[in-house]
Length: 263
Image (tube, rainbow, N blue to C red; front, side, top):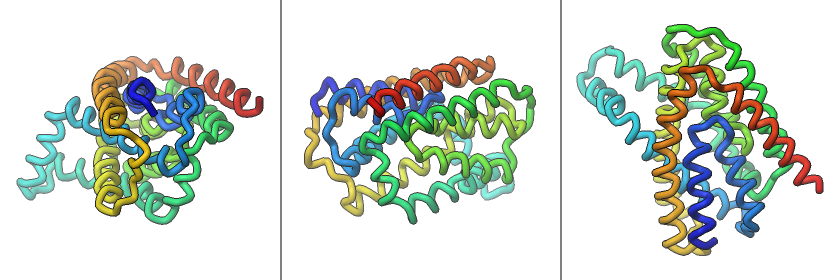
């Protein structure tokens, strides 16, 4: 992989991590179009690095909220910050379970499975369509909501199902306020990505031997910068109930992916 390919993939990751169109699905499509010959595990490793970049961009965008959460936790009181942190932990349980017991099976899905990506994009399109038609509310995320949203996040490990699309749509369909749904969706994934990076680096599972340092660094910063832009943009779009456009987009790209894989 050269620097140009890494930049393209980084920008795609940064934009699609927050826009509800499936970052993993678009990365697999882009790598296929660019002719990437990465084996599934190497492909997944590069994907994880780009996800880490967007996790950092989330922290930058929500730095005030993150600071308040940590501040509230160290007060050792049953306050709003403590409850929010516990809801984040609850939301992580389904994905952690999937990651611990089905890691090898997941790795095989990140090696150009374009037909799978196409069908999963159709599911994303349906979720966004349903969420777009949901009524606006001012409801907060409850502990039960956080578990259900966490299940959606676990299912979204499949390439083609948008993580942000699945979690935001699930939140909205549960009656959660749209802005709060977006905030929870973006923050709930940060501990998972950071934990995954620490686990894989400490365990020596990530294989970067075939990738040069420069392309990897370029891809990381491309994802980080574009991620900041997309995160702020997505928050505004969710508030204005503009998910229908992304639903149409996912359906079109899903159809193209299916046709491409069959031909």
